[in-house]
Amino acid sequence: MSRNLDVGMAQMGPTARHATRGEVVKRMMELLHEAAERKVELLVYPELALTTFFPRWHIEDEEEMLSFFEEEMPSEATQPLFDEAARLGIGFCLGYAEVLTDDEGVTHRYNTQILVERDGSQVARFRKIHIPGHADNQEWRPFQHLERYYFESGPGGFGVWRAFGGIVGMAICNDRRWSETYRVMGLQGAELILIGYNTPYFYAADPQQNALQNFHNHVVMQAGAYQNGCWVVGVAKAGTEEGVENIAQSVIVAPSGQIVCQTITDGDELAVARIDLDFCRFYKENVFNFDLYRVPEHYRIISETRGAILPPEPE
Ligand code: ING
Image (cartoon, rainbow, N blue to C red; front, side, top):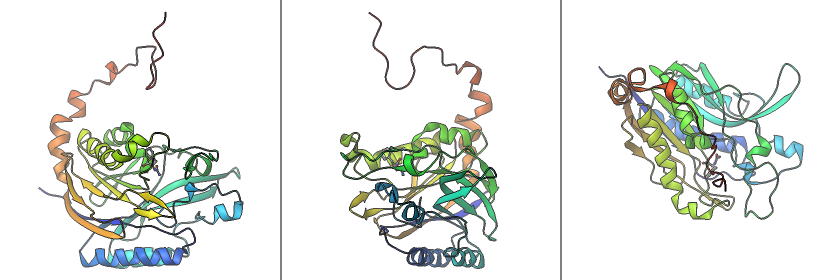
């Protein structure tokens, strides 16, 4: 028994600060058309796919800041992409900066990813939970990582949805570094987790990690896939964007933890693999049979030590 799904990674190269939505959507449309030629059923675009990674700057002008956000999705600029994808019968997920006003009139800004089925129906929106970086402009940095200035953590949790013949979940960028991300979806039966990312090589807080960025990018997704018996797709916004070098190496990871497909450039690139959602069962029903082997009642935090840095031993 196989539940095959042809998945495409629509990795994107650099997007300039002043690139228009139309210019970016044109690139995304080209990737969509190549995906159609290669019989892709689900196409995954990166985090914040529609704009440059603007959190690298401290933008104080409200109008300019909001120019990087979408009030609706599909928007006027992206509607042609939604329409063409539905015409071609290709589902996709797309990362974008979302601004909305809630019922109480409060404005919220999220780092969001939308999942659309092959018939054009909207399956779900996920709002990034782990918001990295800092909230204040820090002059000592060669470039900023101000996601905590621009975005709130999404309140909706890590959900999964029946789509594409399986159980599909989403995460965004820094979420992929946290084991809880995969386990919370794994406990809901996730068979496929879709992730977009923008990740600079240079990590100002600890530059010795710079050389490990590609390793860390893959190890977290491979571990998350294996430990939850699910497929993981991670797609980059890659290349040197406004002077900042970002990792590429988008990957499709099998429930075994093996990388089955990887991009080879740091630009706009489509890479495609056929995944079998039934392959998850080899791991979910055996080594990671949660019902049989997990012992949640014993997972107590019993020591007074907390966090990654242990306090000094009492004198
Ligand atoms: N980017 C980076 C990421 O988590 C980062 C931020 C880089 C955190 C390196 C830690 C180490 O991949 C986003 N957009 O989350």
